[in-house]
Image 1 (spheres, one colour):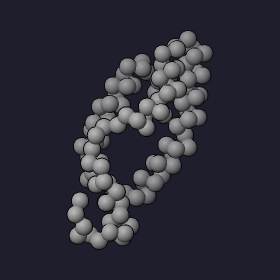
Image 2: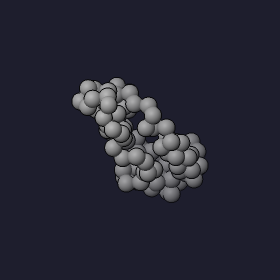
Image 3: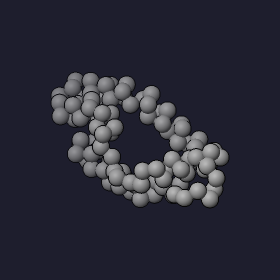
Image 4: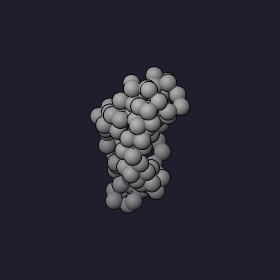
Length: 104
């Protein structure tokens, strides 16, 4: 997104979406979609970050290039606070590892 939009809009949008997601992420759990989403993020984050940074540097946009390059690292350390453990229990219930009457 850094290629198409100003970097400050991208960061603001990610923050807003992160807050909205934190409000609903504990209410819907789909193991298949979560697994696919995790695989896409794991396999695509670094190639897309490096490619975006190179593109932005070639187009004389050093600040967005730097942000794009460190974005995968920032995503791992910066997050919206939420109920840690609730999602894990919901996954465990979905796959039958924990009984349905377990406390959240």
